[in-house]
Length: 132
Image 1 (cartoon, rainbow, N blue to C red):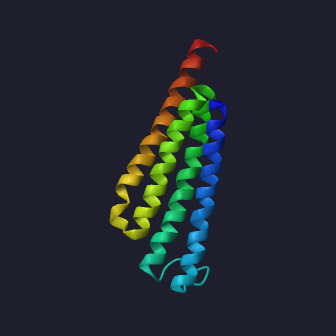
Image 2 (tube, rainbow, N blue to C red):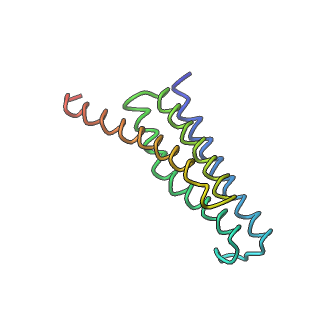
């Protein structure tokens, strides 16, 4: 069962990305921001930044998740991935309310990413050194 945990986290990340995109569409309509504009209302701009920042974070998170899963442990990759997801959701909710409130969610998600990236890097380096 633990071998499926990274797959579940990946699917949940995809749903998070979809949700942030949908929220931008809703905010466009609510605040009357016509595409391709991305400015004009502070409330809209925060929702838009949540989407963009989440996409940027997912771009580096997903490879780190899978490298950690392959070279370290899929269960622990999934646990760190779940922490990353919780951090990103907290970040999204906080940032949408107030830009100043985004810090804790950011720190949670960056810490989880760092665990995955550093852990995978160390494991891969050790395997190379050992000739495995």
